[in-house]
Image (tube, rainbow, N blue to C red; front, side):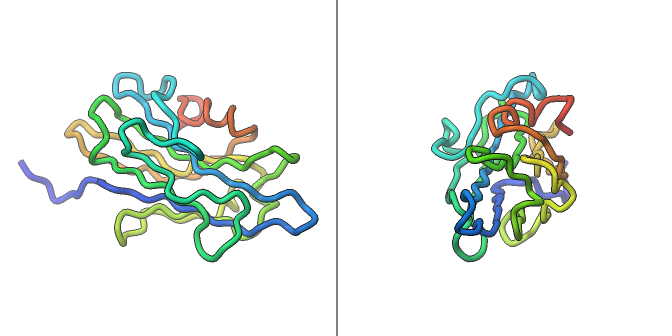
Length: 178
């Protein structure tokens, strides 16, 4: 039986932020995607995609990486080709982490932050991180494969306090995840 619901196929996650003042360390935000096996969707991720990496099969790629937030519009973009992702994966969690190399920085300390999640011309979600202003990282999206094999989007912004490595480990867990 066919259904009028359209499955998600190719999704883009984009973030933006303003550069820091010249007297401060650069603001560096990073998109991180964690892919989980269908038989263990809340265990350890099968793999992570972030700066200087991509999915082993090329289905999740970081198209643009910024270390400063300089430029117009969105500074960093990641594409998730969910329709090409192997059936062995049942969940993908996407987050944004602030690099903490030069001291503690939170979303509230960085001007004009924003995330947008799109499929084609349709905007699935947008947020400015104001609800997680004291956080150093946040989950921004969860994609879950349904019983028919289609992908469903769960949009939420959940803050996290810690460095990018500990965030990447915890972002998809049951305690932290959706």
